[in-house]
Length: 128
Image (cartoon, rainbow, N blue to C red; front, side, top):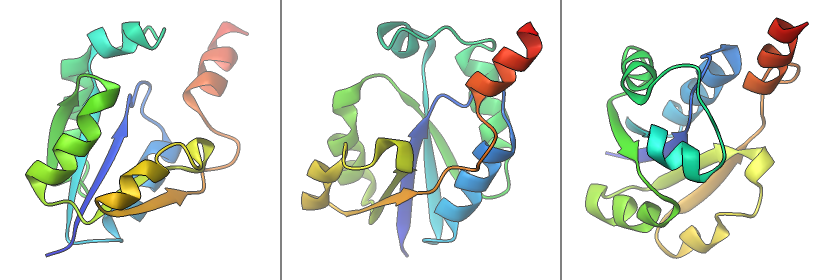
């Protein structure tokens, strides 16, 4: 079994989120998604519209997702990869090169983002 993991906040769930989860799942047989907790998002300077529990439940409901875990900090990725026997780490290409240090533990894939959509774009449209 080929195991894949990805990480994200997944606030204001949109087609870009769905696309990355679908494409991540296509790279393996099992997809684990680490959803950033509210506490970790505060450290990153993010304030979410929806609390962690709601965001995790939305992601859990996506048919491409096999498991959802909390992302509590930057440093947990190596431990997650080792503990879960992960073969592929996936992130959007806006993070290109930032996680290359994980190549020591698994394959690292940066997927193109869906053009024209992001949580920031949605927030800005709502403000207008």
